[in-house]
Length: 209
Image (tube, rainbow, N blue to C red; front, side, top):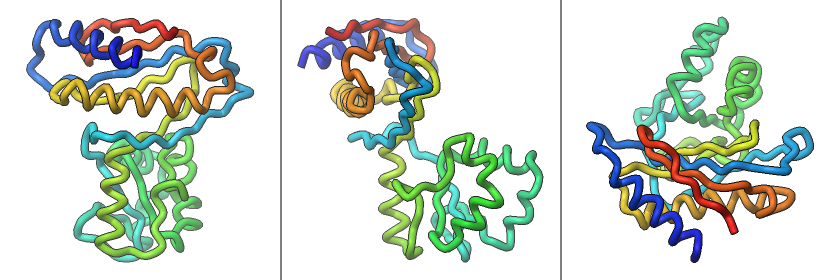
């Protein structure tokens, strides 16, 4: 409960800042301590209660799909050079694939999608049967989720938009914070503090008791 009150206070302060001409992102920064990056590999897939933005999704399917940008096996050869692969990774937030195409996807796209953390995964992103219902459900799930890979001594993620209600932003932050907390070897002892900011503001610091 205490964290909720602190987050509410932080949002109240941040909303007093100068208005901008765009819908600012609410950035959550969880600063870590006594955390050994080499010993602890943290790769998380977190679902949040409220959608932050529609993600750009690309599908590796055998046939074109009218509801999603599709790359079919015949088009794979177009991505044989690194330049076109890098452009593809930049253009999309998320990649999904038909299960039987995964070996080909790994061979063709793995070297760029892997390091970017965008490889279709069994957790979310691999479909056995391609049908409208399955794709719609997956799209909804992806839009309400995020991947977190801890590569440095802080976790930085977008937790919401300025236009969202405080209650929605706080629920998203709580979901992210609790998932990160569970994955840390020393739990709360690994967390130094939390910072909250809008795109153009200075961070507001919250100490974890």
